[in-house]
Image 1 (tube, rainbow, N blue to C red):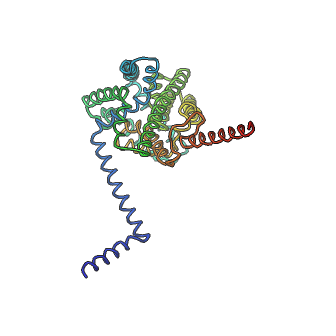
Image 2 (image 1 turned 120 degrees about the vertical axis):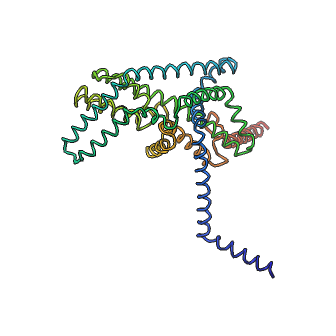
Image 3 (image 1 turned 90 degrees about the vertical axis):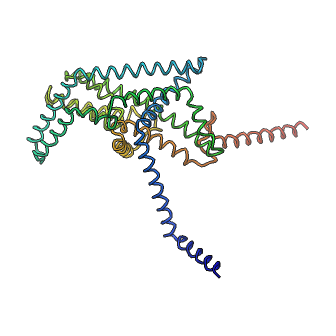
Length: 396
């Protein structure tokens, strides 16, 4: 009797979750658990940012440099020698770029800050005397906040957003360099090690996800660097022709800002316009604004599709949300890493969303997937056999 009652109770309990409301409640509970797991994972990554950030930077750089290593190996160089040549060349180039940027900006930093503050003051006068109904007190507070932040000793620490000491910076750079070397040397074997527990279709999709992520990251870094260089050269040359002071450090800021899509180059252009407003007047400032707008349009509609390809195009809303999340989690470093990580995430989603039988397997020269290629071969063999049979009957 007791067993029968418990069985009936269990059936009734299951019946409570069998209707639409019960299934919705189950899905809601699963979603909450997933959200908690993701939150815990993100919190853990934030606590380990000294390891996570160099690891991500090294992964992105390895994706960009991997074709160089493959090219040198294809020319007959040993794997270790190809890795060392690529690694040392990358260290020299990146070190030279960073050193040049530091010296170009540091020597004129005080003048840059003073000119920026003067530009804000000129803009304040223009807005206060213009037709816009903006309260003067609000303008004063905004100017004081911006200039105070730009001239404060905490500006550098705020820009790094979490990297609080020189020791942490040095540790992160050294760790990133070591990880980059091993990614270049043994990246394939490291990835194969993580794929060992998986088999069949799941392993194939994971392998395809890794390959696709490597391609996306490499294209993003190389494309962004090319676009940043073009924008910096064009805007820097325009500032030099217009005789705007501090053209070189402004061009450097434009180059760095281009690595934060939609925001960095625009902010750098506004900074250049403010300095032009102080030094050259409103006409030159408007010309600078027009040049910056034109470069941004050229970037979005011409340069990105040509340099990066359509596969890396993300919707503007996705970029803005990714940038916001990156800034909240890791400051400016998070803003730089947010968009490439979002592009990789979208590429992985596309791989896993494809059907199992016609997924992203290796394609042949005709662009057919593995399954379609097998069907094509079988059809060709059947046609050849039928033709051979007809010819044999004709001869007989």
